[in-house]
Length: 253
Image (cartoon, rainbow, N blue to C red; front, side, top):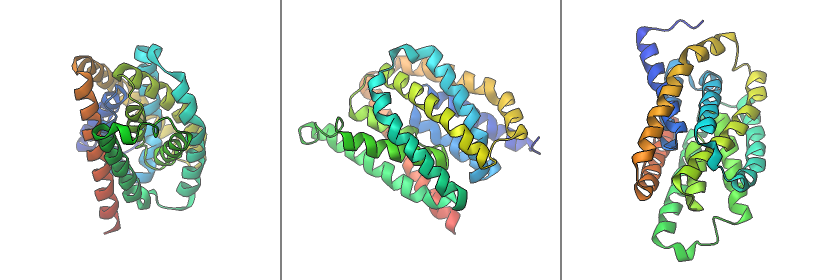
């Protein structure tokens, strides 16, 4: 088992609760657990500690809201995302993933700006969200980002916002997509030595906190109007992207 201080446990409880909230649909909040777990375990090991907890959150989200899934969009994103996972695994096997945080953050910022522009002038970008190249670009970016930093939630949320999914369908489609994608990442994380008996024991202890966060987040989602939900997704996504950029540059100094 890891030697953790009382302060470490407080951080991990906050992070585990944040996983549940993020899996309820507020995907931009996902940067909370990414940052917290990286703070306690370091950026590389934290990806393996987080992965089983993310899968638990995905399973619970699918059980609670999975019936509203739109499989067409899962099928569009999944093949390029799996390619992105392989690319991310290859990069992670010989490069420090923190090197890519500023790049990932810049990509998310650019996508967020694109979505804002689309909301402002929908007539100029009405064909982009449903194009094949857009789905493949977003899918590959998702796969690389989730393998390197478990921070792909905002990217998928932007894709689903761009195609104007209602909030409950967005949550359900995202839940099924990430359940399949995160399970596919397990062999790669095992290959890199990022999941072991210590991490799994810790996962068992934190799993109930993830579930509590998911129930809390679902309660909030039901009370948020669609326009406010879309605005919150964009705001959280922008903050997450900026935090990735700052964290990347801080790691280099």
